[in-house]
Image (cartoon, rainbow, N blue to C red; front, side, top):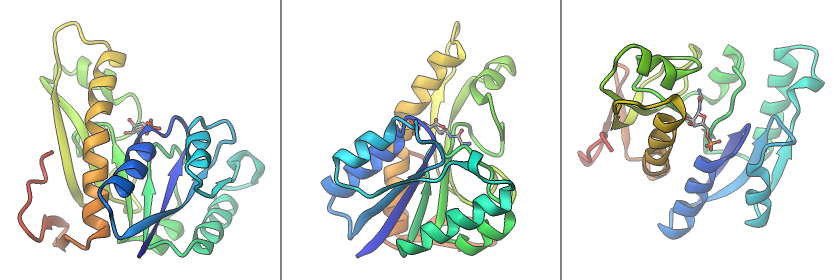
Length: 207
Ligand code: GAR
């Protein structure tokens, strides 16, 4: 049985989708803990209700990024994670931290990477006149919002879309995309060659 640890900063709706998929799809895994860098993260309540261990490590309590990363890594290791899931975790992680969990740490980003790394992705997609937007799940590497792409979901950008409307359309797809991708990681279904991820049984990685 694999241990999944999920890191959140806010609503945690992707975390919730993964918790539900793990249970309903009978993954050979358990959610060992949900960690947050914000005590006010609404997602913590859902995790507690599910009987999942929760830990808050407030980044504001640390003098440096390295000190925060070290405490986060120490806490993570205490749950013996096989898979580390960043689900709306809005802190940049340092190289040493990423290297420590590389290959077993994944992230969801609300754009079709490599386009629109960083913040305000929906606003930027609308301003660029994109007709397609979406979300990407990728293995985490030291460069923020880069790393081998596991799966993507695509939605249309419709006339009159605001960043909020487009963001909600993308988020609804993330709730399908992210559990699917994490399920593959848990099941050992992914192969990585020259930075390209393929599914061992050829399942579509366009969700
Ligand atoms: C999601 O849209 C996720 O893609 C995004 O934050 C939101 C979290 O929602 N992540 C990033 O922007 C990371 N670069 P949630 O807390 O409800 O899952």
